[in-house]
Length: 81
Image 1 (cartoon, helix red, strand yellow):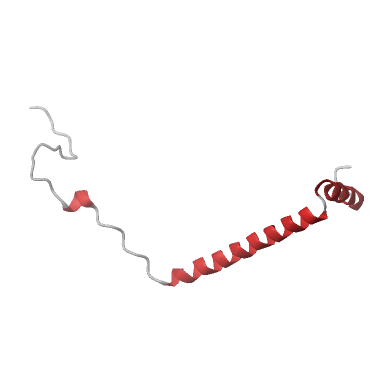
Image 2: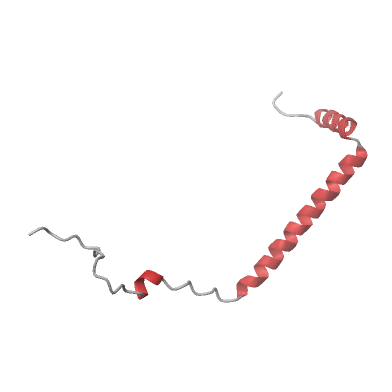
């Protein structure tokens, strides 16, 4: 009793057709097919651009630009004397 037989699925299909109608189900199928087609084209065009070398990361501003002020604290902790 844990699985559905073919008769259960046919009854479910009949109820769905009676609720939504064949015209609306056809529109839903067309929209779903167009979405899948667009997704496949997007995946195909996205994989074509991976042949190029990736761009280098932007330079870090803090490491190259040392401040002239001496009011910043180094990473190492100072000991009290």
